[in-house]
Length: 235
Image: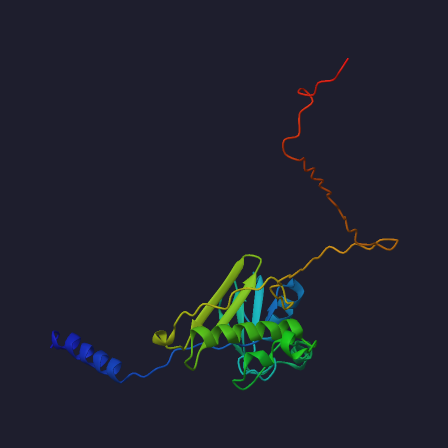
């Protein structure tokens, strides 16, 4: 009997794993972080939390319907969790003033260029929309499947980037376009030049023609003409 118990337990666990179709994910919820000693003591009394030496409270809006009933309170450093069932009017008065200042866009799967302010020319929320356009372009290049979920947080200590609910086989690295030096359209320029020498004188110019003449004289002497040496004269 003792030896059959582990076998029975193993069979039950194995059978449970075979039919288990549990999907693991995560959600984002607004929360209020309280570090003021006076406000911590106020909520500990309002929520009847029997703790002392609490340095921080986190009140999480689990139902995303505004801070109030059914929220969860996490105390630090103990990290114990408590459910806010019926908060008093005094507590609700404080929590109603809490709101999350965020930037959120819910859209169809449209072309990223429609968010790019350098293309659309829209100036409202230009920086936020430019980041959306860049993220969507990166996703379109490297992951063509659906769905996918992302999380990015950054502070003075560093950043956290997380991906989940995606198909690992659908990830395919594709290099991005080459960077450009600036946002101004540039062209390669070809300079062509032709030069000729033109002289402009302050007076009329004439072409000069040089005329030359050569004269040649020919002297013909008769034959048998005595030379000067053979002529004799009388004294």
